[in-house]
Image (cartoon, rainbow, N blue to C red; front, side, top):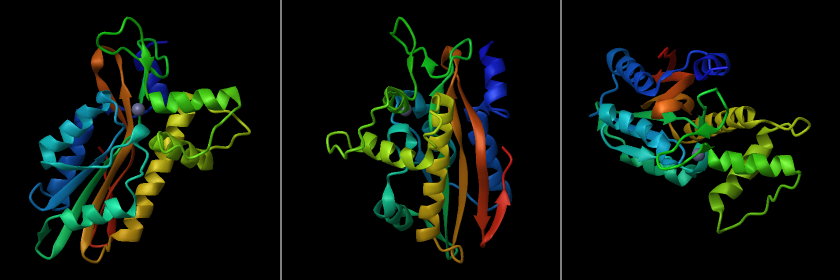
Length: 239
Ligand SMILES: [Zn+2]
C-alpha cells in the first residue's frame, strides 16, 4: 500500500496540518469572535521536534502560545498549569477566551508503515511517537514497569494513564495506542476545562486530532473533536 492509501484508510478526512490550523482559526475569528488580541492559544503536542510545525502554525494565527507539551502530548499540565492559563488570558469586554490545540502524533512511512519516519541525518526510519513505541514494546514483552520513576516522570505518567485507557485482553498496535493517547488527552483536557473554566464569562475552543508525519517531512492532521463554546453554547467546527 502507499502512504496516501493508508492515510485515507486509517485517518479519513486527514489534511495538511497548516490547512487544519488555518481553517479552524478562520472559523473562530469569523464566526465566534476569537481574535489574537482577545484570546490565549494553548498548544499540546509531543516534545518531538517533528511536532513543532503545528505550534508554529498556531503562533502565526494567534501570537505567542501557552505550552501544554509533554511526551506523546499527554495532558500532564494539571490544575496548576490550567490556573496559569486562566490568569494569563486577555480580559476584553468582560470576557476571557481560550483556544486549545491538542494532538498526539505518529509517523507513517512511504508505504504507510505505522510509526516510521525519516529524520534528517538518519540512514533509516526511526519511530514516532518514540515514547508510545517504547511503551508498546513493554506491553508486547508482557512486562510493564508501572513504578513512578522520578528520573522518567513523563513516561511514568504516560504509562499509568494509558493503562487506564487500554483493554489489555487485546494488545494494541501503534495505531491503536496512538488513538488511546488521543482519547486520554481529549478526556483530560475536557476534564480540566470543566474543573477550571466558567462558561458564563469564559469562551473556549477545543481543536484536536492526530498529527501524522508523512514522507518528505510533510505533516498531516486527522481532525478529531473540534468545537467552540461561546456564551455557554457549543458550536461544532468543521476544518
Ligand atoms: Zn512523540
